[in-house]
Length: 563
Image (cartoon, rainbow, N blue to C red; front, side, top):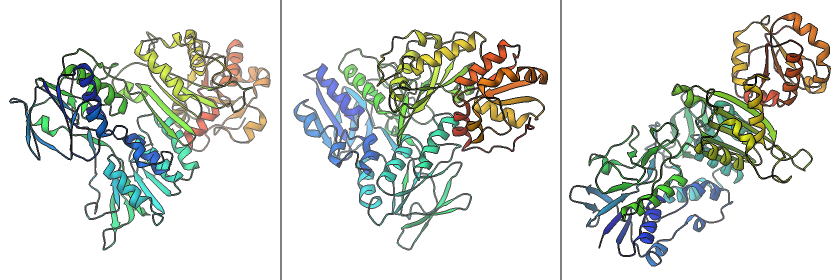
């Protein structure tokens, strides 16, 4: 009888054990978990803080009894594996030792605890990854006496925690060391999310690091102190600054890893060690776009990898080829999503790309409650293949990011998107879906009918050019213009712009034109181009995107003269 040992009981481990049993009824399968719980929903913890998930029990996705009774898995709780001998195929726990034929290593990752001053003396803080963490936060951080909570780290979990603590009635400060929250996304999209967090009453500090905790004689944190010297009085601190793969036991055996210690596995979840498989947040899988080992610590990949590891450990041949950084996060009433490579990654890897951005309704204008959807797509300028995308909006973001993720896997061109047969009915989508609109915008660019300038490039352009170099034209109505515009812009409303063609031509300058969201700017751009003004750029997403972006950057004084 083949002996399969699974180490780790969070998501990949139980997935592997259950799949191994489904594929082989005769194998002896043992699962070891050092804690008291298995298969709990770490991603659901933030939503339990606010009561969206109503009880602790709901976070327990699979109970040990289910694995034992339905799948005949020998589950060992509160038993930690402390040593592995891969040559002799033996694992050693804090209780006994066990032989195996195949080993599945699914130990996950641990929260990183930064070297903050006084952190070892302080007691009213926690990471947010285990049920132990969850219980401490709910019993201490969410008490009536805890009025203010500081969240350090503004990644996916940090933002979700901050939102749900606010929903629970707490005052919240969110601190991030990088230039923007959710730094998996471009700064523009991080700024969009920060605007929402701020508007909901969360204090957001970026480019800020915590140097120490001010504590009292009992070890209670009274204030968080940043490296800039700012003191933030607080009652509880939650750390969410990153994770480290739990792989020391196999590293000691010579397993191959990437820089952060995650194990290298092939598409069959085999490590470099004979008869040792691995899955979950402790592994590095292939990035399907770069063909390099990458790190994707998400529940979707843990479950897929666990399933493959379990099947292959009992002799099947199931592959999990890899991933390409698809992610999504709720930010109050908004959603931020991404897939593939963005401008930062593409630039770092020296991959040529172009960017196109559109703002379109997620439903028709005549249907009640229309909301804008912002879509930015990165594509290869030679082949037109889609390389990545980022999206932001209130409605339908999840649907569109999955369309674009599928398009990346299928290696579709950005111009192929206009040919997709996407579902249409007024409650769900306009007749021209935002994904299709972005494809149309790209066709216009590729056909030299239009040229976009991003708000990032516009900011740099304004900073680096004098007022004599260009015209910045706001093509919105006078009422819109008077409520606010880009510094230095002159107002030529779209319906009157033909009257200004001669003046614009006489200036013989680069023309940057914008409207509220991009469409009227494009129409104004066409009018100018068709009347001999060819050096024209349309601001991608218009004033809406500029305003959302510039709320979190330093904008210089206007450099254009008044005309």
